[in-house]
Image (cartoon, rainbow, N blue to C red; front, top):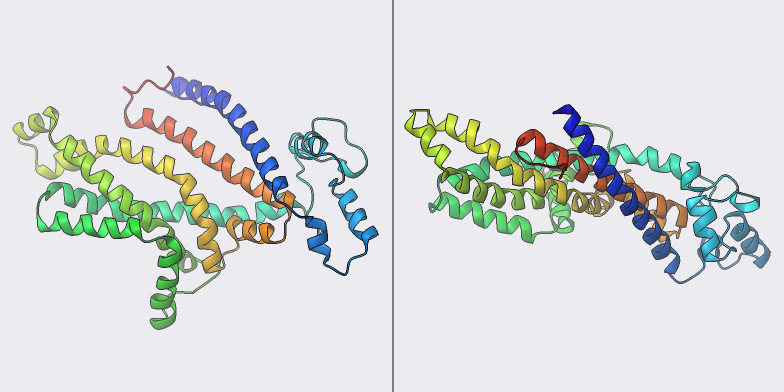
Length: 322
């Protein structure tokens, strides 16, 4: 089993490399296609032309675009002058216009975003599993209808609506939870709920349909015929098989969770990658935006690869190495 999982992992990595190269290239092109001079915007209208030119040269922005890509972004050629020791292959993504190291800024913010994404998935699972199972067991009843209506409401409400409402109710009126920050567990509750409710709504409907499908299988009828209690049939047999499509959706939705974190972190003033990305976009910090988007893309690809491996653990009959 371990050998098969390792083999699958390395095969997935062989696919990930060209995908990440495409992402790296796309990120670089998109950020440089935005019109305007980021150096002039950073220095302001009163900046002298020689100061603008000096800062452009320092960051290599006076080079042709293809040289910026090869030497500054990829770092595939011998560095000199302005682009010294730069590029992905050299492990250095440069500095911001203010002189801050891009990688250090990213690594400083990255843990908070991962914690928020993990907490949002945990909230989604805690909400979706019991509601989905309850709806499936009582299908066609008023409870099933009520859960379906709640799920539709969760899908329809975006996080930029849920977030301010949560702040207004639980932070302003009730004064139960803090509005911003990431210093303790209580700081993650409102952002995690805000980010996880939409995923919870999707998972609830998926768990319901998956459990209903499994309840109609022959092995369930055989287990009931043997006299097993209904809770044993449901939680030991049905739920395990129902989790496979749920894991798939969580893996696919992880990218949406990360992009949703950009809005959520802005709403709750959390010092994560999302908040850093918004600030970098506003200030036209090319290097920081590129590094942040690359980190988000790499995290998404890694999670999808781990999701593939988890399939095998949940159901060894799935042949991932084909």
